[in-house]
Length: 259
Image (cartoon, rainbow, N blue to C red; front, side, top):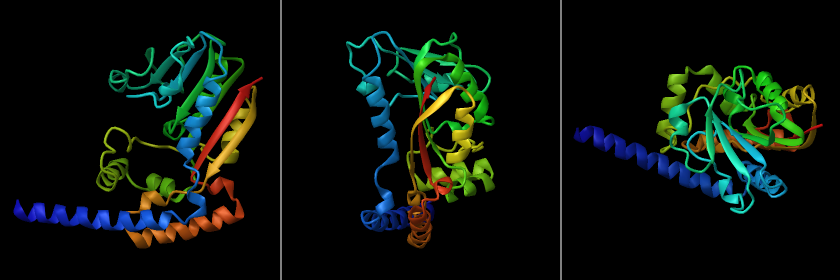
């Protein structure tokens, strides 16, 4: 028992030392800014502010919480609805007005053209068929309604490693390397066409007009547990960032309008 505690303590010290040094190095990396998930929240907040009273907003993969609920004006009358395949996860969500359980590749439980805004954060990579979801979302969106999605790119190194490893090992590694990730990270990922050009092609098939696309090349945070891995990945990032190889980016945001 004493040896196990010593080993655990040594491992934590090793992780903290490496992560601390990587955090210092990160400050000078041009590709590390802006934080793509902060950009996503800003985009959602902007579109929320333009919606009419009584508008419906669907947070796909809403799970335990709705990160952008804080941007909704209490007097707006906007209704937030979280959709997730897990009823257990939705039971914890106190940020939204309503929850619905559904497999979004099979159905979105709303009437045709009943929704004003549909959004997702780190959901598309977990769908075995992302096109079916886009097709379903086109059905429920009103004409002129918007879709905003942020997702990791299929060809990012961390995503390729994730696909190569068995899900049980990926989950175990994440929980060791990223304390507090239990229940948030580690779900099985398929990365079905989740890269810039692949997702744009799908979206355009279903009466959507692409309004905005933004990518982030930064992914070194997945490797900050060991400085040499971090630096190797930084070199890769700097190359694809300089060449603007968007299909090799780490994360993608797409904003589309149904026409």
